[in-house]
Image 1 (cartoon, rainbow, N blue to C red):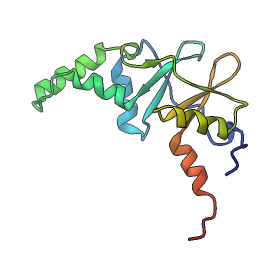
Image 2 (image 1 turned 120 degrees about the horizontal axis):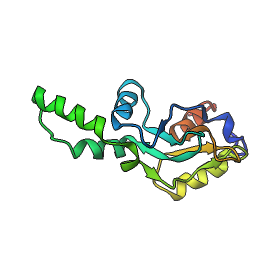
Image 3 (image 1 turned 180 degrees about the vertical axis):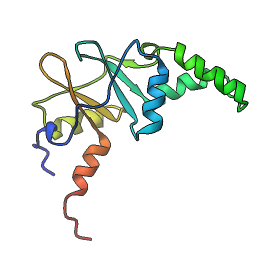
Image 4 (image 1 turned 90 degrees about the vertical axis):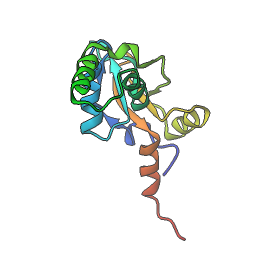
Length: 146
């Protein structure tokens, strides 16, 4: 993999996103049905407001009653409908621009402890998302001699 490769070649384009005032139960639906670990949070103009990670979501779940009783589970579901994403998402996240390279993404990942970078256009509109996993997949396409 060339580190000069444009980030748009390895990103996931048009990722599933949510709005900051959506109920947290919408994130539950995405996390449980898809293998996502990060959900970009956007406003009505598709501009990035933050990211909700599965870890952020888990913190919200931990604040609910942790019992296995069916009635309690129903109560937890109602609580998730009342909680909003804005209260649990990470704001002011690092991001990439569509002209950045894989090298730039690697440098940011090395300096930080997060595993996703939204990709934005010049109007801060969400174009895609790149994760450390995306870079590993791209790297695995290389031919290795053992």
